[in-house]
Length: 104
Image: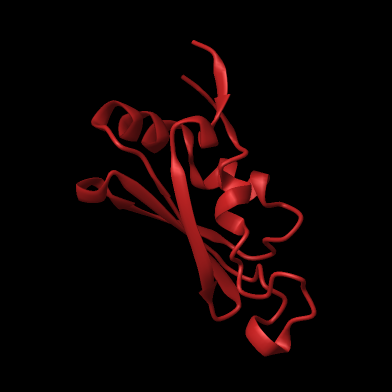
C-alpha cells in the first residue's frame, strides 16, 4: 500500500450550514468506499481541520451514493455575513479535505 491523497481518486463538495461547514467526499466504486469508510474517520477529519474547526465533527454515511458527509461545527466564524473569514461559506473545505492522505 502507498500513501495517496484523496484527490487522486475521490471528489468533494462543501458549503455552509449556519456556523458549520458541510463536507461530502465521494468515490466511484465499492472498494474505495470501504477504504474511505475505514480511514476517513471523525478523529482524522477533526485533526485535518484543527486550525478552523472549533466544534465537534459528525460523520454521516451514504453507502448508496458511495459517499461520506461531515459536518464541521463552529468552523465558519459565525457563518455567512457574520464572519470575517475569507471563505465564510466553507466552499474550499471540500478541496482541503481532498489533501488528506490515506493508504491505498
